[in-house]
Length: 285
Ligand code: PSU
Ligand code: MN
Image 1: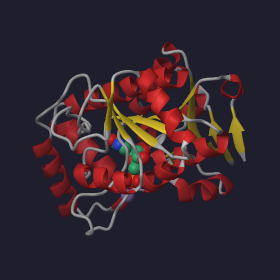
Image 2: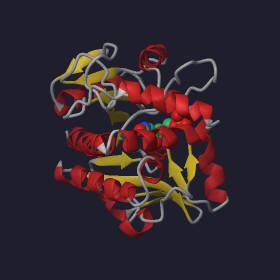
Image 3: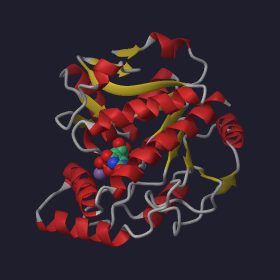
Image 4: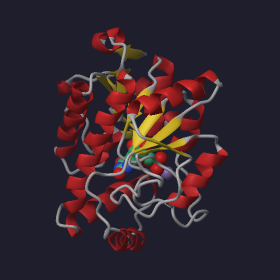
C-alpha cells in the first residue's frame, strides 16, 4: 500500500514534505510550484525530498513532478484517520502534517518540513477543534520544522498542549515561538538551538530516551508584523459566511492573500522554502 520512491529508499538523509499546503494553501497552480521549490531547497542542503500523498490507491513517499501536478484544490484533505480510506477509495489525498507524520512513522523517515503546524483553534471549545497534528506528532519519532503553527490558531494554547503532550519545541536562533508571518510576540520555546547540528543531536538524544516527535520552529526571514488585524477580519468574515471545519483555512488564507496585496502569499512561500532548507540541513546532520 505504501510506495517509496527508489531514490528515497536509497538515501541516508530524507525530508518528508506534506501535500495539503500544496493543494489547499495556495492559489490554483502556485502550490505545486512552491512544493517543487521546497524540494529543491531540501536537495541544496544535501538531503533527498520525499513529498507524500495518496494517489491511484497507493500512499506515495516521493511523488514525481508529474504526480505532484495532480494535487489541486479538488484533492481530499487527508489527516491520520483518512489515509486508509483515501488509499482504498483511490482518492487523490493531500496529506496534512499529521497524515504525513503517520506515513513517516511507517516508512522510517525522521525529518519533515511544513509551513505551520495545526493546533488549537481560537475560541476553543467552540468549536472544539484541535488538530490531529498535535497527538500524531507526540506519537511519531520525527522532527518537524515549521514557522510555528497556522496563523489563524490560538498559539499560546497550542504551546501549552505541546507541553502536555511532551513535545519539545526547539527555537532555531529564537527564544519564542514564531507567529507564522511574524517572528515576534509568541510564547517561549522549551529550548533554543543555534544550529541544525545541535537540533539533530537533541532529536537523537530525545529518541534514545524513548521520546516521540519534536518541533523545530524557525522565524520567517522577513517578519510581517501587521497581519493580526487582517486575520481577525478574515475569521469574522468566515464566521459570518458560515464557513466551517476544513474550509476555514483555505478561506482565511485567500482572504489574507487578497487583502494584504499578496504580501502574505509571498511570506508563506518563502517560509515554506526556508523551513524545507533547514530540515534538509537537520536530516543531513
Ligand atoms: N498551515 C497553513 N495552511 C495549511 C496548513 C497549515 O498555513 O493548509 C495545513 C497543514 O497541512 C496542517 C493542516 O497539517 O493544515 C492542519 O489542518 P487541521 O487544523 O484541519 O488539522
Ligand atoms: Mn481541525
